[in-house]
Image (tube, rainbow, N blue to C red; front, side):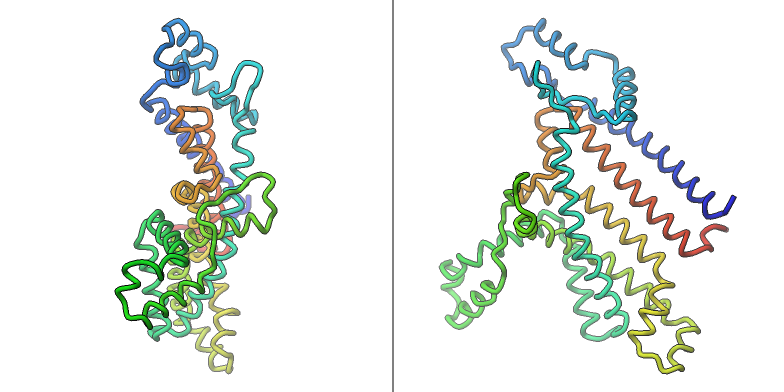
Length: 348
């Protein structure tokens, strides 16, 4: 068998084993959540008989092992089960609840990737070309600063910046400044587009309106992930620029940008694509905080709401989707790294 194919199959098998182990962890962790959904739904006045009957109806009276294998069996068949919030005669499937939210999260992730990946590659290439220049120092400082703050802080600061756009000039702080300085700050703030600070999105929202309302969450995620990709691109390009064949390209009179794009970047792609895949996986898994801050109706917000209401099937499905996406993207990065660097096929 071809070494590449064999290695890819091994990685796929490892990914499936990892997903199986993660499913056990997800089920066990959710099973240990405090509180009882049946009691929470029926209220304190419900009798023990009523609670027991409701528990039998939703299936949480069975042993955990039996419930786990029943859950996994349904998932293999493409059925995530029914929400605990369903009523008799009105069955709401988990897939029906998750589908529109998953679309919104994927929309936000793709939108962010289309901004962040080209931006990171461009900044990384320019920082490598102008290494140790003022541009390199400014880019590194700004990206390291943004990555040092947690997502919720960046999100709240961006929201505050948008709000200050219309309110700054009337604040006591602005009035305490010299008039020319307050006017200058207000002029700069008014250059900032007035993005919505709450993402009021529904199924009927037009595409470009969706883009506009998702702009602030997307910018937040971009600021958080762009530093990793930019710095890896810069480091990989600088490493390649020290190679002998790059010196030969310089002797042939090629321009620095041509050398980077045609010779350095293709050979530095393996570590760069790995970091890109890790950050794309983060876009799916790490959107929970950003979605909650901007009330963005994605799968992260849905998961938080389901945890509050003890809707176990929805929580399990959301967590498993996050885990499967993260494993799949990491597996993709691994495969691309192997395909672009045959030396990884024969590790020492």
